[in-house]
Amino acid sequence: MKFLSFIFFAVLLTACKTKSNSSNDQANNGKKDQLEIYAFHGTRQCETCKHMKAYTKTTLEKNFKSELKSGEIVYQVIDVDDEKNYELAEKFEATGTALMVNKIRNGKDNIEDWSNFAFEYAPGNLNDFEPRLKKMIQEKLK
Image (cartoon, rainbow, N blue to C red):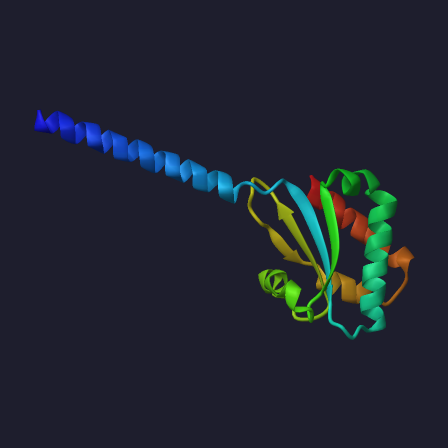
């Protein structure tokens, strides 16, 4: 009889643990699949930073209007010097001007730093920046 009681409690504990893990998985995976694009900047901004933000916004509005509207793509401009943005800046390790992308898939973050691209093409013009950024975003949406 003691053996059966032991088996019963072992099964019960396992079931409780499994249920608990499922709840944790749901909490971690509660994020919606989407592409987050963040243009980070400091309070003082150079021309490259201003262009990066403007060109990114224009590219998104021109080529990804429905994805923005549906929430498949989220674009935000973040001042890293503002304390309310501290946690987000820490998550992306952004301390100044940066173009960061997070492809959330199955509730998991997949962060990439596109700052080198931004610094290379934002000082130019929109005609240099837009087609390249459009292609990069299309790849991430696949």
